[in-house]
Amino acid sequence: GENVEQHPSTLSVQEGDSAVIKCTYSDSASNYFPWYKQELGKGPQLIIDIRSNVGEKKDQRIAVTLNKTAKHFSLHITETQPEDSAVYFCAARLSSGSARQLTFGSGTQLTVLP
Amino acid sequence: DAMVIQNPRYQVTQFGKPVTLSCSQTLNHNVMYWYQQKSSQAPKLLFHYYDKDFNNEADTPDNFQSRRPNTSFCFLDIRSPGLGDAAMYLCATSRERLETQYFGPGTRLLVL
Image (cartoon, helix red, strand yellow):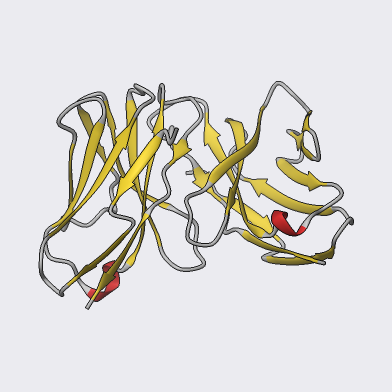
C-alpha cells in the first residue's frame, strides 16, 4: 500500500518568514495530494490540493509543488502569521483499485512566533 | 453554514458502556467516512459508506460499527468502549470516492 512520510514534525518560524513542509510518497500510482490544516480541538480543514497532472498550484500565501519523478510534494506558506499556527497534514491517494482512500503523513506542528 | 456537523462535540462514557456518535451533512455527498485520531497522530480510517454500501477497513476492530439510515446522517457505534478508544472521532464526506474529503469538527471521546 501507499506510505507517506512528512518532515519536519515540528517547525517554528518568525512571523513574516516562510515555512516549508515536505512529504514523500511511495506509490507512483498516487495522483491526488491534499494538504489539511488542523487547529487544536478542531477537524482537519482542506487548504490546498494538487493532482499529478500539475506541477505547482498557488492560492494567495499558500503554494504546493509536486515532483512526480522524485515522488515528493511540498507545502509553502509565505508571509506567515500567528493564525497559521496549527498541525498540517499531507496526504496521498491512489488513482485506482480498492485502495482509494487517503494515506496521511504524520503531521507537522507549525508555530509562528510573533 | 456548517456543512459537516458532528454531535456531540465532547462525549464522556464509562468503560464498557455503549456510545453512539453522530454525523450529518448538508452537502448531499455520496460518501461518508469515519476516522479515529489519537493525540499527535494522523487520522486513521475506520470505515466508509458509499451511498448504502458499507466498506470496513481490514484492521478496524469489531467493537466499532456504523449505520447510515439516509444520505444525510451517519452514526458511529462503539459497542464496548475501552480506555484505548479514547480519541477524537472525525467524520468526513466526499461527493464521490475520488473527490475531495471535507471533515467535520470532530467528537472527542473520553472513556472513564
